[in-house]
Image 1 (tube, rainbow, N blue to C red):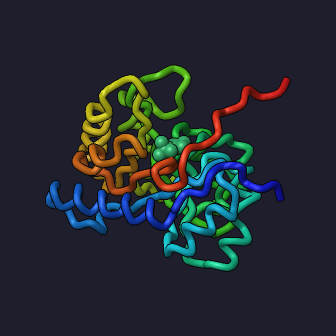
Image 2: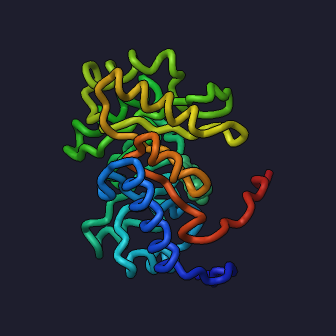
Length: 235
Ligand SMILES: *Cc1c(COP(=O)(O)O)cnc(C)c1O
């Protein structure tokens, strides 16, 4: 395996810092600290780096690509059965079977065809990962997620027609807008639909997200350090 060229972060210390910040924000919002689950986003970091977080006792992780997760997690999950793995990136229908087989939480359910395919795979395999519905709160054309105006109907369809286990909503606010507006919108959609879970907040804004009710925060760089810049894909 190629050596990781990035400088070694003190991952255990970073985890402790983020956990302390979560506890502080939860307390300020008069919420229990264990009401907020830290999902350590491990995309682009190799298994040896992830290992350091596991050694520090962390168990909840996220990946944004099915293929990358398949190359990294099956052995770790075999060795440490209480790992919980979240898919936080867009899911193509033709990868739904692999996603159901590997992930414990699928955060990016956003269209009927995908919900139906997930339901079929759950029926076939008996594995039922929790599902979050991704809402495109910023209505950005390039971004995945159901539009806010369509979200009530889609949540109802997921529950009643496809009967997948809806555990919450997820959003990724536009990078150039005040995230609090998006967190408030997601919370309102959850409230009026009787949905409990809210996945929102990343390294830059998870304290704000906790104030707006996040039950999962998805934190990558604040734990693992900077990711390499995304390379333009080779032609
Ligand atoms: C990469 C990623 C994160 C983590 O982002 P950081 O800024 O590194 O904390 C959170 N959510 C999603 C969907 C991501 O793709």
